[in-house]
Length: 180
Image (cartoon, rainbow, N blue to C red; front, side, top):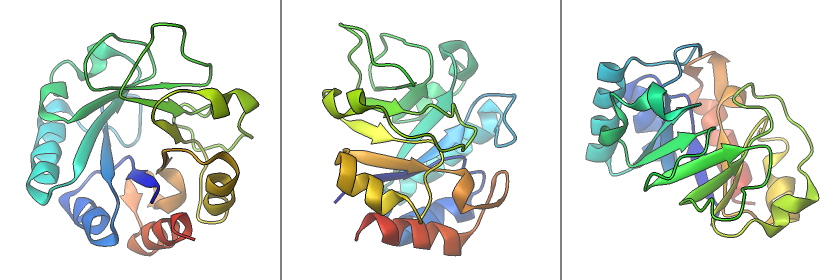
């Protein structure tokens, strides 16, 4: 089974869908520039709800400063800037430097834009939990899992009707495509 995370969730109902459909983790965006942003108090509420539902929660942002007021409520901090913190999911489009160890490494050339780019060969050599992200959809995720055999995959924009408004049907199609 491939670890599957759905990111950019904005409501408890969306968390319920993720649980019902068998996702392993959810992500809440802590970057104020994002259309999916949830202010710290609301992000905390979503993290607490996710914990009560038994699903792992990620707080996603570019820097540590952006998540300082809410990160303690989440299981994992997913940051696009390296941080030596525990429970880090380091997201980047370049390989981690020696010594930059993290709980997860998210390869994401799109930096949250949802634009797909071919994955570079070096992703095959990333040690630990490699998660592919950026422009994944129900149409391409199965082939990418077969080709790269990552620990996991992450989806956001391709399962939306509008930024931050998820489609349960699209979430279901994506999850099903990860299991083929």
